[in-house]
Length: 149
Image (cartoon, rainbow, N blue to C red; front, side, top):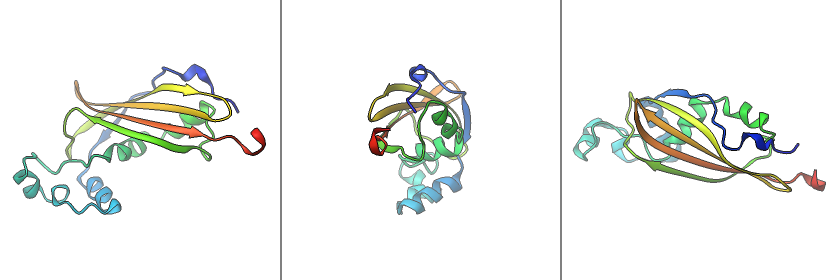
């Protein structure tokens, strides 16, 4: 199924994500990050943070827990989600993210390439009220099917 190129440049519905202290801990435990600034408020404050900060890769948690509909949007675009490959992820933090923050995320389709091997780049912009706090970019590859289909 070819990619529906009409999605290029479009944004999906905004979603809300509340940053939970437990999710920060879970991610750190899952990736083996034992830095106490993510577990202990006093250590975080002594290091200059106002609370335990979200680790840099926390945006992935926010994307998939906050907007699980992304899989359906990908299918609508013609992406075979069972065959996609993760190509790249990048984050630009504009402000630190903390437990209790209520963020609004908007996913947009930055670029698309169809053909034997498709490629789609998504950008998610997160805001806390009127303040932009994070721009997260993800690029996926859709490899060709065996036999070129």
